[in-house]
Amino acid sequence: MSYALVILALILGVVVWWLLKQTFNLEPWAATASTDAVRTEGVRSPSTMIPLPPVKLALGVFLAVVTSLFALFISAYSIRMEYGDWRPMPEPVLLWVNSGILVLSSVFLQAGWSAAKRGSIATVRFGVAGGGALAIAFVVGQLLAWYQLTSGGYLISGNPANAFFYLITGVHALHLIGGLVALAKTVRRVWQSDDTAAMSLGVELCAVYWHYLLAVWVIVFGLMLST
Image (tube, rainbow, N blue to C red; front, side, top):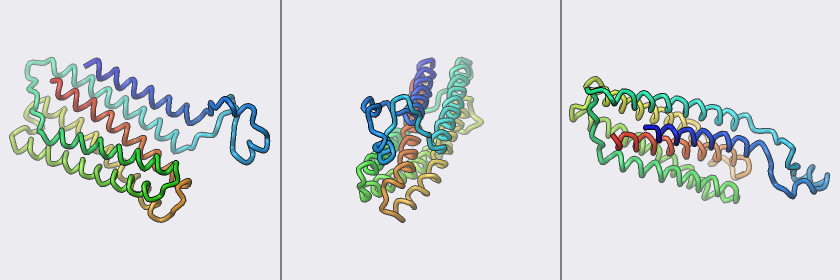
């Protein structure tokens, strides 16, 4: 299970890198820019710090905390599975379908983010709406997978492996539902305005969050398949 912890550590490193990238402008030509360019275009020298939007900082800190939480879950999972009473659960085919849905959801939001940079409002709307609809489908699919398992007698109290499965997948789903609340607000702004520059930050944060949850799901699902 150490590989899962290593990957989570790498994800945490990516979160830190993303925050630093938002804070510093490393464009080498910025140092030669004129004063007028600084005032009109917002150009900064490589050594100058650019104020980081509080929401980006908050998201970075939140993702770091969530990474630590899942690292603890995985550590406990790897320790508990060494006991003789551990009986791995079957992996419903529906979990594979759900994984594909979550990948597509992340792709749609990435498309929306890229479109916001280009100023293409139609693609932004398509991206965030499609990403949100697919995320809802993922949550519904997870509920159906849990229903299949419980109907087959794999109850949360039946075995430690069952309890860990429902705990980890449930916590992941709760984080996704929380993201849907933020995404719903972004979708409303996208439909109320054609100003892609004003909505770009919200779309970016949603896309980053979805990519993060996808990475966590790949690790969690891979961990369960390996046992």
